[in-house]
Image (cartoon, rainbow, N blue to C red; front, side, top):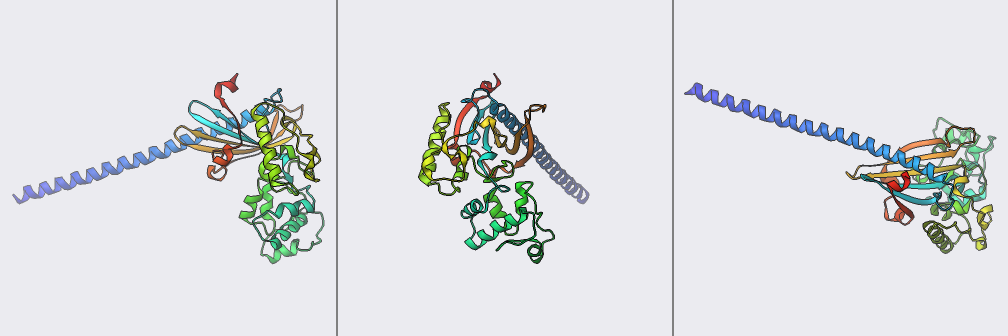
Length: 326
């Protein structure tokens, strides 16, 4: 009897062990399946987001000016069978060029930054010291010695910024300041002034001498004209703005500007999402492709979602996918 009881206990232990092993195997397989499905869905979302960039390139070249997508911060939506894509276009000419803007414009820009006035002055002069050709330190500026004193292993390049990301190296610009300034500035416009009719709302809000009510009214009129397929209204010349030669209304059609930031975000039906931000420049006539990619990077959707209520206010038009395939 003792042997039979011992055998029964052993059988029960073996069965318990096999049950645990089977459960563990099933759980492991579910996890691997979930990871594999996540990778697949992410790859699919990234591919669809990339197609949004291609769609923007095509619509920027639309021969019909009133159907051409605008690069003033407007958002366009494409509804496909298993995905929704939103694309936002931003003209680089409608931003502040950190290589060309003078000290006054940089001061006006930094006056809106989330730092105190003393730090604002330091950042402005540090930017100017970084891009100028000499080693002379401006008041509140920073050259080689100041970077060494700060314990940094590098110094100003004394030449124009090569990318927006390079701003993160400037003494005084931390992560919070860079995130605030990133969407407002460019290195691609090549002009000292800002093309106000093609500037996004967030850029207009930091421009000097522009009244908030005037900005709101103009954005509403510009959005209405886009929705109705009409030419964009000229920027009001009575604002007193003297930093942009196009403020009188000589707005350039989006397809004729040279460089753009295109943000493409996709939401799949399974709730997978992806965001790609690309900077593209219109190629010369001899180039095989109509656009040259200057920068291409995936970004976290939570950092730059085009599906928020605030972004939805900038939605110009929704397309069913077949409309753009014809």
